[in-house]
Image (cartoon, one colour):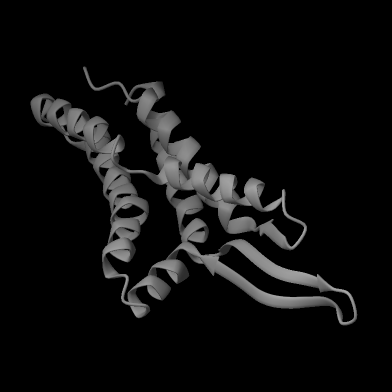
Length: 162
């Protein structure tokens, strides 16, 4: 195995390790409150969610389409991509490896995991502009971000031709 592919293999394993807590750990807390003249600071809403928790909440709230799309693009495709990259590294038949690698590059554009990270970060920044809304990023966000970056880098390292 070429050195680049060995490094890519290690990075794929690390990305999968990062993906797991990125999916189950809380990613964002949103707190909504108000400052009332006589009462003082009043908490109106507080929500902390993980990616899988958000998907479950969407399904429970009859938003199955949105829940399915997040499940597909942020969970299933990333897992499928990582497992397929491992197949590219270990299958012997070159033509199959090339076709699979090209397919992975195609679905990577649809993974939306990186877009999800940017969306969460923008939500975090947007809430900073309102004193009555507070957002806190949690470890899940950073693990998911690490998954995205490491996965992209691993994909770029792979050498298919032998």
